[in-house]
Length: 314
Image 1 (cartoon, rainbow, N blue to C red):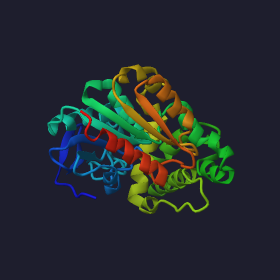
Image 2 (image 1 turned 180 degrees about the vertical axis):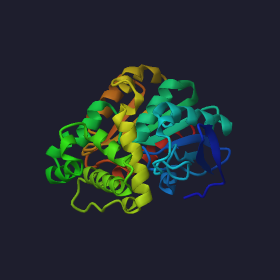
Image 3 (image 1 turned 60 degrees about the horizontal axis):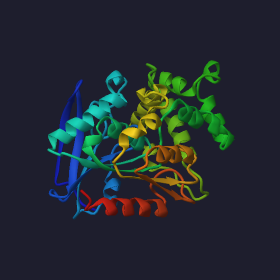
Image 4 (image 1 turned 135 degrees about the vertical axis):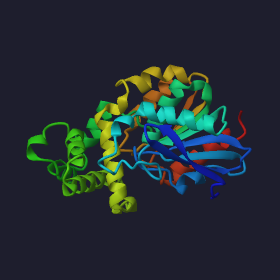
């Protein structure tokens, strides 16, 4: 694992500073990493997928999370200037700031939505795409995770639902949680953040030996993550409901690899499959016993193989 050789805070406007870092070979092939969440932040974990001799890897914390400022965990932070469109603009500002012409885009979960949307807006700036745990962040996806998935985890979902006021339990749960996370009472906000993250940790678990994500033990992380996820999901990521699949034709000529676990409950396989069907230059790699995220050895191996394959491709 390579430590960063450069880092900084990029002023992207609207009072936001975005943390970025670069590692690997300064003269290597440029690649940008788009983390999930929204709101997870970019940890050193992501560096392990890249050969440091071959790649110049750019990692950054998206607006409002990680080391970027101001923090979305502060209820006074204006989230109206934190949207998918703003993030796409931030990626372009960062590319220009670092003097990169084209780069490989690597992203997982929410980062796959953001990476696909970015590539559709700026195809001339993307050399390849490597995406995993593919999500398209449609209203159907949000309703699946926040309501329909209760059929798979009934007891845990009942707790998730019952954390909101009784009058709002039959409505859109993501709206109810976003409302609680904006409540003036810190205790209400903390309760909402804890229950939201408890549910997030539930629906990524498909194995009996699943270990809870330690990030959710941190109250500051919980608040940032819950506020940003609910903010993005309640607005359907500010994308037309079929936009990611509809505009897949804009990716023509960009080679891509989509790596997805067949047992991914959080982001069912059909979206990755439909994207691969609409994008002729993409290869879909299905890891039969993997769930959501890159923690499964087979999924991680497939990602490294894709990244290595593109290492010396223009």
